[in-house]
Structures are given as C-alpha cells and as structure tokens.
Length: 287
Length: 260
Image 1 (spheres, rainbow over the protein chains, first blue to last red):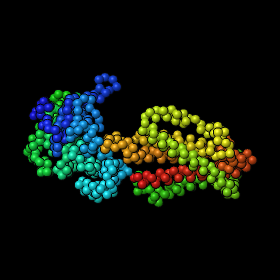
Image 2: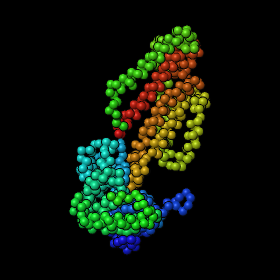
Image 3: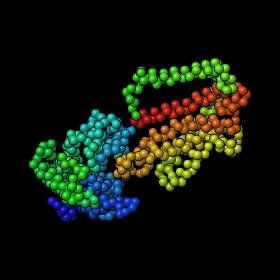
C-alpha cells in the first residue's frame, strides 16, 4: 500500500448496499479567466455501512469538496455520487445523513436544547418527542448541565459537541464530518475523539471524516484515504487494522499497530513533499 | 446580547444619567444668562425661561399638537415599516425582484420626500391627514427596506449549508435562520426611521393641510410674532421625536433579549 496504487482496485469492495459510492467524480471550479481549478479529478471511493473512513491530505487536496459532494451541498462536474444506493440529492432530501462542520454553526438565538431540536423541529417532529430526543443527545455528549445555555456561553469544544449532537438528532446511518475538531486544542480534541468513537459504536453509523491530523485519522478510522493536491486525487488508502470500534479506547494510542499505521500514513503524505513542496506537506499536522 | 456586568452599577449610572443632565442644565443657564445679559430680542432668540413659561401655559395645545403629529408619524411608521420589510423579504427571495426594485428604491431615497407633500395634498384633499401619513411612510420605507435587505443577506454560509442539508423549503429556512439573523438590522432601520417619521410628518404640515399639528402651530405662532410659543412647540416636537426613538429602542431591547 505504498506509492501510487491504482484507485479503483484498492478501494472498491463494491456491493450494492454501500453507504457511500463515489464513482469517477471530478469537480472543476470555473475561474473568471483561465481553465478553472480542478478540485477533484476522477475520484472513486466506496464506504461500507458502519465503516469509519477518514479523508486526509494537505490543503487544496479536495477532501472538503468531496465531502460536500457526498452531502449534495455541491454537485460534481463529472461522475456520480450515490448514498445508500440513491443519488446524493435524493439522499439529502430523504435525510439519510447527519452533518457537522468545522464551525459549530449553532444558532446563537437558540439554547443548546433548541439547537439540537432544530432539525427535528424543521421536519415536523412533535414537541414532546423533540424534547425527549434532545435530552437523550445532550446526555450522550455530556452536556446535561448546559441544556438551557446559549452557544456564546459555551467553550469551543462544548459548542462542537452540541453540533455533533445536532447531527445525530435524526439517528442517521451516515455521518459526514468536515474537520469538526479542527479548531480545538489538543487535549479537548483527544477527549472528543474518544467520545466520537464511543458515540459511533453506539449509533453504528458510517462516518466520512475530513481531517488534517494523522493521529486523529488513524485513531478513529477503519480506513484512511490519503489524498494529494492540485488536482485533488486519492493517492492511496490505508486500512487500519485496529479492531472493532467498541473496543477502541485511550490505550489504543499507545498500541504498536497505531504507530505503524501512523507512520504509514505519514510516509504516504511525504510523497507529496517529494512531488510538490520540498519543505513538507503543507497544512498537515504530523505531530 | 447579555449586558456587561458593569452596566447599571452606581458609578456608571452617575456617568450616563447625571452627566448629561448637568451638562443640559449648564447650557440652559448659560443661554438664559446670555439672552438677559446681552438683552437679545425675543424674535432672534427667546430666553429658555420664557419658552418654559409658554410651554407651561399652553401645555394642552402643545399636547394636542403632539397627538396630531404623533398619530400621523405613527401611521406612517407602521405603513412604511411593513411595506419596507415585506418588499425587502421579496427582494431577498427573488433576485429578479431585487433587480427591478433597486433602481426604484434608489430613486425614492434621493427624492426630497416632503417636497411630494403639495402633490399629495391635491391628490387626497387638503382636509385629510392622509398626505402627511404617506410622506412619513415614504420616509420610513427607504431605510427600513435597505437595512432589512442587508440583514437578510447576513446569513452565514455554514447556516446556509445546514439548511440545505436539512432539505427544508425556503420558507422554513427563512423562518429558522434568515429572519432571526436579520432582526437586529431591521431594528436598526426602525430606530433611524422612527425619528424620520416624526420629522417628515411635521415638515409635511408646512405645505398645507388641516391645522392642529405641531408643524402648523410652529408656523402660525411665529407668524403672529409669538416666538416663545413657537419655541414651545419646537420643544414639543423634540419630545415627540425622543418618544418615538426611545420606543423603537425599547422594542429592540425587548425582542433582542427574548431571542438571545
């Protein structure tokens, strides 16, 4: 699994019941003059139900663009994106996924509970059911004492936990996360990662997780998709054999296999260095 | 929007309430001293005590004038604000409408709206208050429209993405995110508009229409050389303008507190 392996053969376990099926997708952003920017070039990726897949790569490798295409927040220039066997657009309309962004994106005029209830409220869930579900999720993310607080009274980590609770509100079988811990300090970040592993084990949702951090990707994922920039392509996919999610804990960070996968991903990202920038892969935290 | 802990504490109160009062009293005393000391004629500048005396003895007339002008301003404010907000929502929803409305509203904003008063008096009859209310409404419409439209465009990209991911109708998204985001902007517009409504309703009276309002009373008092009384009516209009401004501010504080 080193170097430029062929994309399709390595990352297509195939099967009709995949959570996400991205086929030959390209996304070119038109420029006012010139040929435009190729954010993604012929990318294919399959995510199985219940699988945790991280997208990692330097800035400009198109990992966020890929996530936005899966969420149907953007449409590909070429290729197709299917979510649970449906076109991405239909999956969005059917609310098949929950999403969390780098910015928590909470509504400042709503309380923690009100923010978590938002998607339920918009989709016509009754008041009592909404209350119950929000209370459940607030408990899940450990914010029981803060249900009535407003977002600006919370720390960044707490806000992000509210955003994650909100993304889980409708029990989606697919969770899309765009650097949700990117703005957090390292301590908070590791705690949030532990919580996310626990939450994912409980909800059994498939996750597509965009990140800049190698340890984060390795710790959380079943597979790490390493991407390279300009044009955005999948360089390789590392299968992290660290076992079942439910058995992942803090001690995993000391595990031999963890370090092996870590250096494997790091070496793959170094490939960029040799190819494009001599100083190091920009925008990637190698700590 | 939660207040800072300093607000309301005694030293701050002293500074924000007492200081302007002291300053005002000093200015009035100085004014009185200059007028009596230099023996300035009343038609140039009446003394504050004289104005105060006229204000006291004509309290009923001033209050009646404030009621008439205030009513016109209020009706104008309501019509203009409702129209401004509705049209801004329409413009925010449909780009086409925005493109159509922009030049018209732009033209409205540069027309000296009170100059329309004579035309409106002939349209609606010189015996009715309608013309004055329309002048106020037009003056209110422009700032409310622009600030509301600006507010409606302040939605953060992450909130827009979120609403798209929820696959909600644009009406739902408008209610959940766009309107609450725009609310502070709407109130800024209303605060500006509240004073404009009073000024426009008052000045519109100079161009004709029934008597009884503050504007008419100022001109007729001045015309009969009763300068103290004219200034008493001016004082009345200042109070009316402040009442409108403070009411708008109060509603703003009330709503922003409730919505966080």
